[in-house]
Length: 335
Ligand code: KG4
Ligand code: ZN
Image 1 (tube, helix red, strand yellow):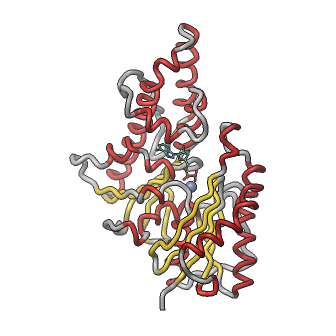
Image 2 (cartoon, protein in one colour; image 1 turned 135 degrees about the vertical axis):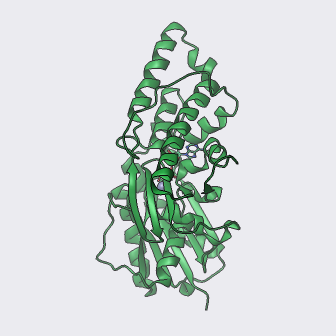
Image 3 (tube, protein in one colour; image 1 turned 60 degrees about the vertical axis):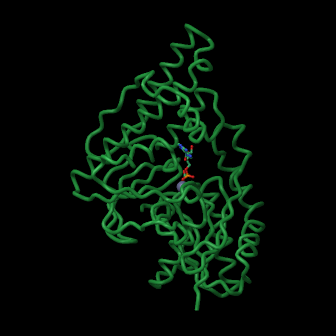
């Protein structure tokens, strides 16, 4: 008998639903919330309202695109956290009600675990990582190095002490007048710029931790100073600014990941999270001279999506790791 899992993701500003059959994606719909663009970042109250509007149509379309009837579903997996509480509450309450209505089990999913386990989705038609591996979560809210011994045996061994990597892309982008989220735009513009044109100071942080607030402030001071000399500085140098900023971020990441490889002896590196689709990061880590193996999720499973939630649901379903109606949404939720 095939196992059908419905995944529901609503941790930030994307409402997503997906149906997987035995770990293979039958449907994966993401409703982006355009409303935040004009605010230059996610407005939590607007995000929860938009989730409420989107969740019913997104879930019903995901089920019909999968070409199954809702009564064929074996379980519902939902994002319990971490994320914006109001956003999480919409997905968790909806999932609980649907599981009651259909009389099927509910499975809670940690969003950051899901970003890493997205590499196990069956339609990735590529080699799967083997354990143990170093999980690198780089998203709008997180930047972590995780020691992963098994699907659900994860320990954070390094993380950002302030801003996350995606946040750094987005905030520096905002300083240059780019809309939210600026990460993908900076990535695109970087391809046309000189990554050696400007030098930004890299943080000196001990261990395997990261810090991006100094880079962010240094970047702001630099563009403010240059703009005083030439008011068109940003528009003239936009591609070079993007390329130099992205290059600095990649160097910070590469230094820490190679340090983690050295200190743990683990040579399998698995990426996850929205920033892991950055073309510069993929290029740098896939260089042939590297003596470690890297895994990136398929493009559509890097930024927030429900297929990764359903994938974790499937892995938990096989291991009878079910949740219950008492468990509530958690804005802070360790991996
Ligand atoms: O994982 P995600 O969709 O949401 C969170 O869990 O935070 O990540 C979103 C983040 C945003 O900061 C966005 O700017 C960044 O991922 N991002 C990128 C790229 N695509 C998305 N950053 C750099 N380069 C990209 N190509
Ligand atoms: Zn995410």
